[in-house]
Length: 482
Ligand code: FAD
Ligand code: NAD
Image (cartoon, rainbow, N blue to C red):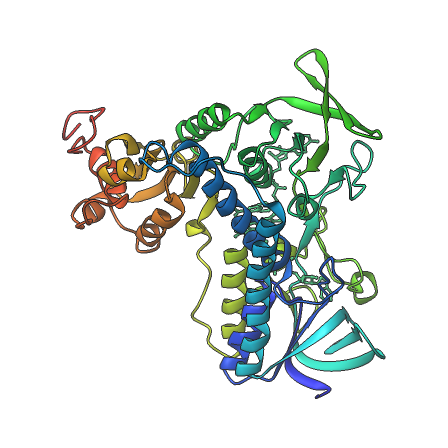
C-alpha cells in the first residue's frame, strides 16, 4: 500500500466511489477511504445509497408492492392464490442480499480499476495530506495531489421534539429494518422518504399517518401531479395530514404518543413506531474542518465553486455534502465530472437543469425541469400538455391506470421546460424527458418521434401532442393551434 496518491477520495458513496473509479480509469493513482459500518458491524463501500437508502428501500418497495398486488389485483387478472401472508424475515433477507451483492460489486470494481479501497476514517491534515485512521490498526498520514471530500449526509434529528431512540423513534435506516410490521405507524415529514417508507409499511398492513408541517404536499412537483398522487395515497389508506406541526413525542412502554397542532387544534396520535424523516444534514464531523479551515455555509454544507473546488487548495467536494438535490445520481455525475477535470479533461460539466427526480411509490412520481408554476414564475409564457394513463392500453393490461403526464413548454420557442408525472413506471419513462431537456428538444421533436405500441411511453407522446391540442387518445383541453 502506497503513502502517496494522485487522488484521495474521502467517502465511498455515490459521490465518492464513481469519482475514484473514473480517476483511476483516466490513469491517476487513487485511494478511497470510507468508514460506513452496517448494523452487523461490517464495513461496506456504497455509502447511504447502497447500504441504507436507495437500494434497500427500493427492494422493500418492490416486495411490498407485489404483496399488495397479490392481495388486491391478482383476482382481477383471474389468478387465485389463496390467502397471502408476509414472511418479513425473508423479505428483509432478500433486501440485505441485494445490498450485499451491490456493495461487494464496488470492492470488485475498485480491484479491477486499481483503486485502493481503504476502510476507515479520513480527515484533512494540512496541504496535500490526509490523516487515515483504519478501522483496525494504527493511523497514518497519506499524501495526495488532490483530495475529494464526498462524506455524504445523515438524517436530521428532532432532538427536542422526537429524539431517536433506535427502537420506537427511528430514522430512515431504522425504518428499513423493522422485524415486525407495526400496527400503527407515524411518520414525521411527507417528503420523499416519508411517502416511500410510509408506502412500504402501509402495503404490508400498517395503519400509517404522516404528519407534514407544510400546507402543500411535495411542493417541488407540478401541482396537478402532486394532487393526483395525494388522492391515490389517500385511497390506499395512507393518512397524510398537511399543516401538522409536531410539538412532542413521548415514548411509553408500548407506544409513542405524538402531539401535534393542525390549524388551531391540538391533537394526539398514538403509534407503535415513529419514523422521523425531515431531511438530511451534511457529514462533516470528524473531517478536521476547523483545523483545516474548510469553509462551510450556514447550514453546514461544504462551499464549492462550479468546478467543485473548496476554499482549500487541492481540496474538492461532491455529493450530498455540498447540498443541492440530495440524490445519488447527482452525486455520481459530480464525482465523475470532477475526476475528468482532475485528469485534465476540462470540457465536461453537470447540467443542473436536467436533474431527474423520482419517488418510488405507487403511483410513482417523477419529474425533470420546471413545473407549470415555476415556469410561469420564471417569466415564461407557458403551454402545457397533459395526458392520463387511463386511456393507455399497456397501463390497462398492467391494471395500473392511475396517473397523468404533464409537459410544460415555452410557448414562444416550443422548447420543453419540464415534464412532471405520476403513474406506472414513470421512473423509467422519465429518461426520455431528461434526454429531451438535455438536447433542448421542442415538443414538436418529441411529437415527431415514433413510440412503440402498446407502451406506457405513448402517454408521454400524447401529453406532448396535447400541448398543441393534437392528442389522439386523450381529450384535448384546447383546439389545435390555440
Ligand atoms: P453517502 O452515500 O452518504 O456516502 C458518504 C460515505 O462517506 C458514507 O459511506 C460515510 O460513511 C462516509 N464517510 C463520512 N465521513 C467520512 C470520513 N470522515 N472518512 C471516511 N468516510 C466517511 N437517492 C436517489 O437518487 N434515489 C433514491 O432512490 C434514493 N433513495 C433514498 C432512500 C433513503 C431511505 C435515503 C436515506 C436516501 C435515498 N437517496 C436516494 C439519497 C442518496 O442515498 C444520497 O443522495 C446519496 O447516497 C449521496 O451520496 P454521497 O456519496 O454524497 O453520500
Ligand atoms: P425531504 O426534504 O424530502 O422532506 C422532508 C419533509 O419533512 C418536508 O416536506 C418538510 O416540510 C417536512 N418537515 C420538516 N420538518 C418537519 C417537522 N418538524 N414536522 C413535520 N414535517 C417536517 O427529506 P427526506 O424525505 O428526509 O429525504 C432526505 C433526502 O433524501 C431528500 O433530499 C431526498 O431527495 C433524498 N431521498 C431521495 C429518494 C429518491 O430519490 N427516491 C428517496 C429517499 C430520499
